[in-house]
Length: 188
Length: 261
Image (cartoon, rainbow over all chains, first blue to last red; front, top):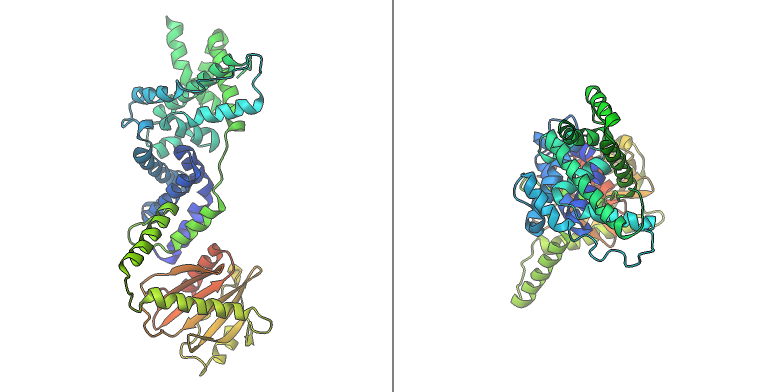
């Protein structure tokens, strides 16, 4: 890659570093690995920059970041992953994590859930989703990606984007309701 | 029965509606259904509440500044070949095992770049620090290459190459005759924001073995890049941000046609 290409690469791709990092941070679950994965993704992107045809840099870059994240997950968090795009299997993988959500819930029956606590729990509920659900929530709710972009980044049809989003939200609602059930009525 | 099937179909529409992804036909179909179905109305309310809560709750992580810098250096050092990722952990592990090997084996190294370049780099940094002392920055203070280049005639064996980078916010302020590793070298001085950048053109040093490409390092908080092109080794040194230094290096290489190799 010559200097002109490299300058173009940096101008197009570096503005999306926060998005790349956010996705990797949510998928790996920690800062140090997120940094390594993002660096790996950028170097890969650089190597394959010749295949970038535009027009939008963000989905192209995030596709690579996402792939690097899932490679990392396969090695480091294999139990979270199901090796198939079969939604029923994802459902099973998700259940194993969601069921154990807040096993010891609030011990103080009279306590209402403070807003801060509620936020922490919702955050945790997202972190505990199976990766295939977590990524659509992060891409949609945090990064404002359209269904079409998510479909491109995750390499799945738009119909699957929709069904995964619906299921992911179902799980979050259930997790929060279960939590609210232990505390006081707190409309979600 | 009919209504149940309808509700199943509406689940996806409700999410798409909350996400603003619904076309008009579907919006109308959804609204017609909602008017008659309290169950789905409740569901939409829940989904809207969840949507708002997620957006106001979830942390949107920002890339740490250290990552930005690490990336800049990693990309600048990237040859055209395969990608090599040096993670922090792995870097430490590799360094530790290398030290272990050296100690265990008592390996004697021949005079190669591993020994030559740190010395040279130290001298380049010393030159930079010296230049920052009062009155030492430039011998010829000018932003005009036509005044600077002739001034070096007969004084150095490798003539300086001047790049006009004013439009990129690297302002040429002058040239200086310096002394590095026993040789007279031409130093050009640029200003970038509040930082000085020294750009040295050195003749090849004895025993010096260079690879291809641009190398980067940091000594005493000063960042350096260097590369060989033709019969000269070029050094860039500054206390500016590493990313700025990378940019300067890339621009000089392109602008002055002195790419490595």
